[in-house]
Amino acid sequence: MPVNEKISKETGASAAAIEHHYGTGNEYFELWLDKTMTYSCAMWDQHDAQQTLDSAQLRKIDYHIEQAHALDADSVLDIGCGWGSVLDRLHTRHNIRSSVGLTLSESQAGWISQSFDHPGMQIRLESWQDHGAPDASYDAIISIGAFEHFARLGLSADQKVGIYRDFFTRCHAWLKPRRWLSLQTVAYGNSLQKDFDQFIAKEIFPETDTPRLWEIFAGSDRLFEVVRLRNDRDDYRRTLRTWFSNLKARRDQAVAAKGEEEIQKFEQYLRLMAYMFEVGGLDLHRIAFRKIDSPK
Image (cartoon, rainbow, N blue to C red):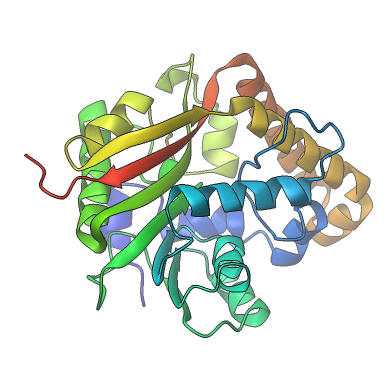
């Protein structure tokens, strides 16, 4: 299905802005991501210094599946499905009947179609704003690393909360009674919107602004109750450092594929983001929401 560019441009990152980053090349990302091609913060076991990125990413995926109460689900919606690691895990490990993954990246959608062939798994090239009412309500919704793209720089707090309110209203309508939404997002920590690095805004994630925690809660107020909240910013510092090490180890291949300038840009991005999480300028929130069936 086509992406509604008008809506995307008025609120968050457009399909073109998403593809600016994620369309860098599937083969390029394969050089330094883990085997599942998961491009979001892993969940590390702080008591296991030898843990691999592969196992930390699977640990994160299983955490969100559990928090969304998707272990017994018939149908699951994954908003911002990336390269399909959550969807694949749902079908191979948990044997769910049907799933829908939303992405704005043609590169990711094509990669998923070539990599997986699970009965009942659908990939849709559309935004959450364009996702229509499903034939039947979902048992669970998972969204990892997409929420930070829903609003763009320059919007007021009220405008951002309005966008987030729209998102949670739609999720509320899509979910069956008393069902769950598991969300993972980067958020501002001890920093302000004016601190958002212009290199990141221009070269890495155009048309993107991260939320503040209170903005998320304002958007979900009286639609979902917050049952569990984690701030795992050190997990993202470690994930970014691991990605940087992986990229460094295969730098010659990366330069051959993308060129020296592009690799220097990604190295700068990974170092800068790791520093922001280390000092608390950015947070990494994992939030379990339970639907309020009759909001006041």
